[in-house]
Image 1 (cartoon, rainbow, N blue to C red):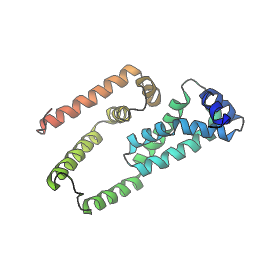
Image 2: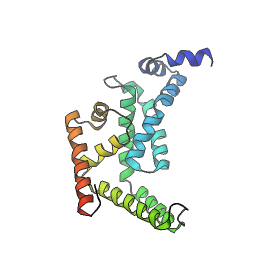
Image 3: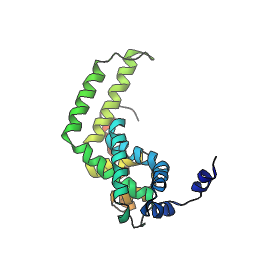
Image 4: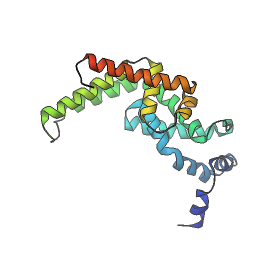
Length: 194
């Protein structure tokens, strides 16, 4: 490992932000390396599509670089960039074009033969349950759905999620708990065991 690579491991995010503000593109590249997976998983939690998540992640880092001067350091860089990713992902999720793409992708997926596995029937039942749960999650009110999806990505602490979503940590915890309770109750009402 080179001495440059070793030394960059000891540099804090705050120092990298300052270097990037001073024009060091490599410093921002290191920030992207450190926090790229967290940003991607944040986008994936909101969008469900790996291709869309990748695109939003890249767009968000471009935006973060352009807005680096506005980073005040009140939250960590990771939390700040995740908030940018989350907002952009929500905007993407709302777009009509994305809905059309998802419709086409689902139609194509239904046309593909079921891969070999335990049995075609078991695979179909598993897919049906997965789609049911996804539908129930989509039907949750936004104020419950978004915290649940972010927590499910398991990339941020509750305090970081509270900052990203702009709500108190106690409210975040209640909303996640309430979303889980509602999903569990709906599944039980539909005859699925605990």
